[in-house]
Amino acid sequence: MTRILMTLLVSLFLTVPLAAQEAAEAPQPDRSATGGAQTLDDILARQRGEKIDDSFRSGATGDPNSAAGAANQLGTLGGASDSEVWRALRYGKGDVTVSTGGPVAGVLIQDGGMKWLQFRQGPLATYGAYLLGGTIVLLALFFLLRGRIRIDGEKTGRTVTRFQAVERFGHWLMAGSFVVLGITGLITLFGRKVLIPAFGHEMFSTMAIASKWVHNNISWAFMIGLVMVFFMWVMHNIPNKTDLKWLAVGGGIFKKGVHPPAKKFNAGQKMIFWSVILFGASISVTGLSLLFPFELPMFAKTFAILNQTGLPQAIGFGDLPVILAPHEEMQLATLWHSIMAFVLMAIILAHIYIGSIGMEGAYDAMGSGEVEEQWAREHHSLWLEEIRKAEGQTEGKATPAE
Ligand code: HEM
Image (cartoon, helix red, strand yellow):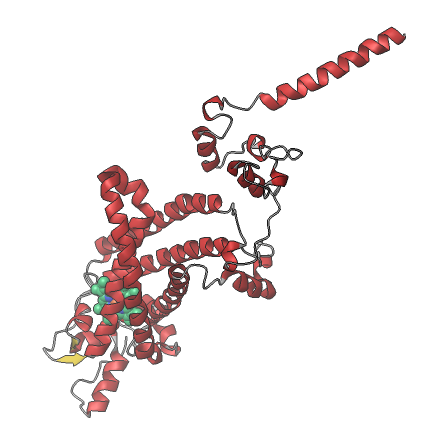
């Protein structure tokens, strides 16, 4: 009986460590080429978001009991190797206090970059491309079905001043810079995927450096234009009852001969205006935070305010994080900046369409500033009445709205 028990115990002691060793060793790939350090395959697997057993790294922090261990990293030169110290820090096994050097110095390793990279290369780029592509397809379909919206009535040959020179300057400052910002932003986001295969690394490197420089510097023109446009047009963009009538008939853009009344700006234009102001401001603020890295963190504070409203919890996000590393602030700023920019670009594509090929007579408003009186009567009847009244004339009185 004793002999049987002894045999059992001995075999148990012998097999358990062996089995554990086999289980630990089985999934580990061959890392002999790197001397046990991570290989390109490990890095690529991590970038693909695969779950990998990183014990070969997290455990390789030196021998804690020896003079060369991570625990003695701050000893004399010749202590733990650099890579062991960094691994100890990454996996929370090192003990470091940094007291100077600003907020960034307090963070030695920040792991969120991988999630940021995956979101940026994945959903952001994919859905962003779908949004812009889908908008262009819809506009092309609309053009095929509806054609160009013509001036229905007889042209009078008389014109009305629609926008003063300063208004057109503000518009084109904002519009011109937005188009350049949009293109250079897209080069930055899609460059690796689209431009490197097309033009090669050398060429793309030059394009990327130029894009970044232009993007950073043109941003000021956009912000100045945005502020100008806001102050010049905000009074004309306060919603009122006329907007409901305009919306009820879809602005008349889907049917020939339907012209709901409107003041200087109709409900559709008011939506464009407020989108430009709100999305433009959001893009500008996050852009400023990126222009001055780590100086203008804003997400932790915004999240704290949002948490208090109960909104994130109500829509299933739970409590948003209110303590963010400086780098996380920057990562969120780039993502929010791009999401807002994609939405505004889609809206602006529709605006550019209707302001150019989509509607006869519209472009003149921003080109010369003078529009055909019949155009004004059909699209902004109440505004034309106001203008004529102010001029003390009656011959240009707008026809009653349909
Ligand atoms: C680049 C091509 C563009 C063209 C051809 C264009 C054309 C026009 C025209 C013709 C108007 C006057 C409409 C009217 O008389 O009622 C206008 C107004 C306006 N534009 Fe543009 N625009 C362009 C780009 C932009 C961009 C990039 C923005 C903003 C980022 C913008 C923002 C506005 C706003 C807020 C208004 C006033 C509201 C409205 O009419 O929708 N535009 N644009």
